[in-house]
Length: 163
Image (cartoon, rainbow, N blue to C red):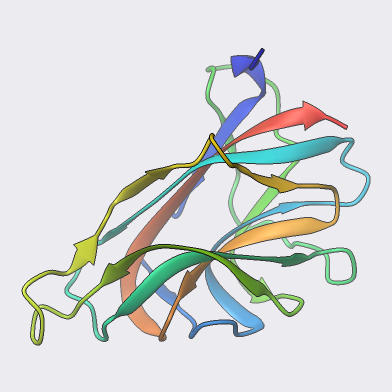
């Protein structure tokens, strides 16, 4: 049974620029489960929105990798879903150098409005059926095909399950 006391969320607090594809000088939103956390991080939801017309057209997705060698430097603080709940053992950042990622899932696309009649599709992805499971030492991060200007806001929701 899911325990809402162990559900957490994180979102960029302002629109961010993103790096191209699988760059290791990453910007966007990343959730990392540090070594020794004692939990598995089950990603349940991912979403994004664009605050401006895209500077380029491309795909939005999720990439995963190891944070066992390059530790996550937290720049954002996850919030418990239940107000006053426990502190998350998982860390979040809007950008840092990361170990080589692998594209895990494509979630949607974005356009420029100058060359397309749409700017983004879709906005929210619920993924509990086949969640991304992060063991200690692993991360999940946002992916955009091409680098973008500061126009994306991303979010993740996850459950921390005792390891």
